[in-house]
Length: 115
Length: 115
Image 1 (cartoon, rainbow over the protein chains, first blue to last red):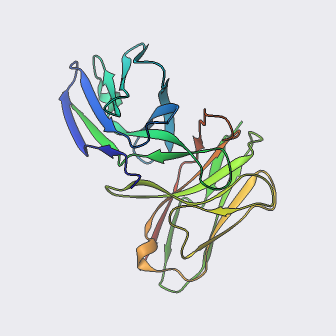
Image 2 (cartoon, rainbow over the protein chains, first blue to last red; image 1 turned 180 degrees about the vertical axis):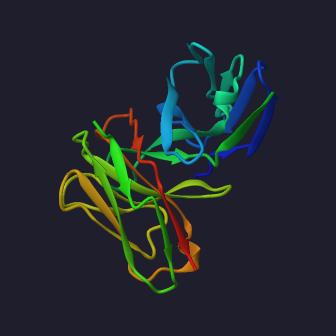
């Protein structure tokens, strides 16, 4: 099947680091993405990583990629209450029909940041 | 630059009623998508379009129809609504999906309840 798996919930204290994990399905995925969904809003691209990279850092965000295990993680340093949201990982998979690539999204991880 | 907009934001239907959800984008994107989001299931692709006048089925197309008469608009229709179609519907667009990188831009969503 084409299930991208994530744990459903994560709770952290403000100022701690958050680590959100994702297991994807297609070893040929060239790009992997992290999207953020704030309450009542659509998804926004947070960051992405190209498959030939092991790590990508962008300010408080660190993305780690383990291609052998098809495991992706997003670490948020110094987590703030404004980081409370649902985080989706997504992999880019070649369309069977129609050409190009489609995104397959994980189930989403709800991050709750407590004071 | 409004990005991706969706109307309406909320709607309540009775079983058997019909309705059309409208998506508009002002980024001159070729590709447009309709997803539904259900708790614990992430986003699932309903239909998509690779250009004006073209549409194709996604993962969960049954009970829905779409049209892309103009490049900037993508309509999702429910001919005879069922309670199983209670969901949050998201429209997205991307410049193309022919390359590996496929950043999708999302609208704010339409919350639909079918009684």
